[in-house]
Image (tube, rainbow, N blue to C red; front, side):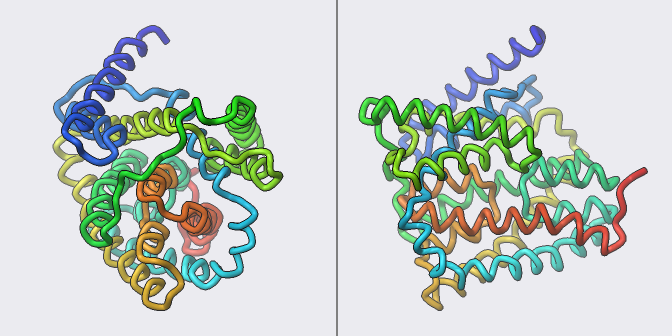
Length: 345
């Protein structure tokens, strides 16, 4: 444990420096992109960086609470209105798979790696499923990390220049403005949801567990605020740091093959995401910003931060991302078995 402390402290200091540099330059979401950029560049330069372990997981619980607090009776009443756009998610996921799997196969990846590299699910889940099926875990980790990195980097530019969104929206109220009893309930919801979620084997337990507990409190009229802005800022810092350190120890061969494969696949994902965004926008199923964020194939945590910064309808966006994640998590292993991609012995 002790030998991990020094590199972790160094990584945290680097992330904080990156955040303040980005803030000083007036760049958007400095506490997300500053740590991500600083850690990414340092990792590629060969620095001995180390992820934050459970601290990063705790940071994700904050976003789970933020999502849950956004699930209000008004959002629940609107669910029937969302069914038109949500119904497109299975088609969206299927098209990604139909295009993505042959794409990775043509690049020379084995069937299991190709299958789970193409699936638009969370990095930890896709790496775990792929490894269990006999795929290349390192390739999967770097391909999905690259997907998240590029989408998180490009999405603010698209939101700003294409959709005219401002990313200066209030991420939350200062802690001093949030009633103490609600702060306590949110902290308890984060801890309880995370721990119980892990014990019952819930995928994405650090986000979905706190989300479900907080949603129950919100629907019950016990919580009326999202986590304070200070907590959201800390969550951004750890999530940005976590993306950057994925590239520690990347060799030139991996840079040339795995990361370039991930970059090329993002181009395909961008075309598909843009197409579905246009469909829901032109048919009146969603406003442009909400449609874009709902179909952007990024992680829940990253899309939550962008939705908060853009002042978008978080409930609408999260319903679509949860649907995508559930379909991928539940469907990808089943479809893989049907396709003859078996678990390794």
